[in-house]
Length: 365
Image 1 (tube, rainbow, N blue to C red):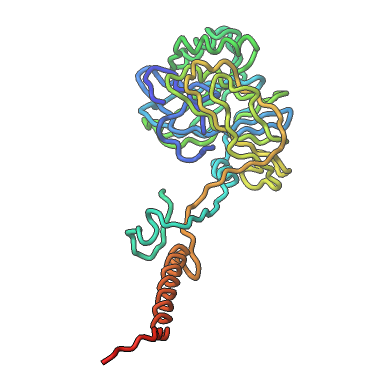
Image 2: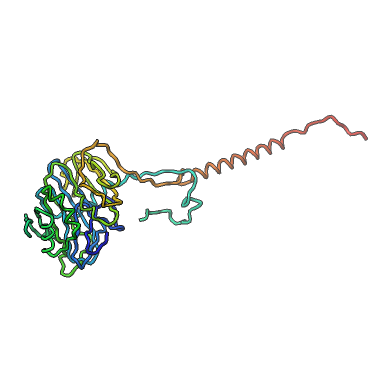
């Protein structure tokens, strides 16, 4: 989402997938608010989130791809308890994408279609590829992590939190103050992240190092309320690693969440093991659309459901062939025509061999 002097909220997709290449439109960050300086703008082309919950502790790993002319920006995330913040593994999301790739299957058709012989126009080698602080605010801790200046905060009211942000060089729109009220009332804390390039005068561009946030919680919760400030439709994409398959209790103002992958990972390895551990774990991938973000009325509270596996299937349509590529339809049609011709020839031949009939009539001269 693009905007000037406004909060840019982004929800990933792993997702995409998405978790895939999410470039347009830009997405808003569901679990936090991205705040540039007054004279600058920043947009988030892609944000991916992975969540690990073991029943007591939740870890959220986020990776942003940003654009704009901002040299500094702030990112605010509410958390239900004291949080620890470190850098995440850059290879995590690529590993998750590989684990959740759709199953590839061939689907055959009998009659030729566009692209099949004799309707194909490419007669090359036949090889193809798919297209491509202030009063009321306590600073629990502050540290520099790569391009991030991280402050862990407590706040007794949203106005005090806004004052802290403004005194640290960032504009806080009035709407965000109101959106933070439910978190302040529940005595949540906050992770405030100042994004700043490590090279002097450079702007925030491209893919940022993942940020890993860990906090204690008796239930799996994904903060979403701040996304209601987004001015355009939003999409949520979320990887969830837990002991069982997890799904949201309600749509919280969006379309019904869609599960795009659910399955048990028997032996997590590499970056995935670094987040989930080496014991078996269930991985659930969720996608959700929010056509009207203003209707978002809660955070996502996720619950355990039946461990039914699910994987999407992508079909490749192929012409039915035999014997090294001969179309079955050609053999069928050609064989039928050949049979008809042979039958006709046999009938003609039989007719020619038939003896003449003697009628018994003689001519008289």
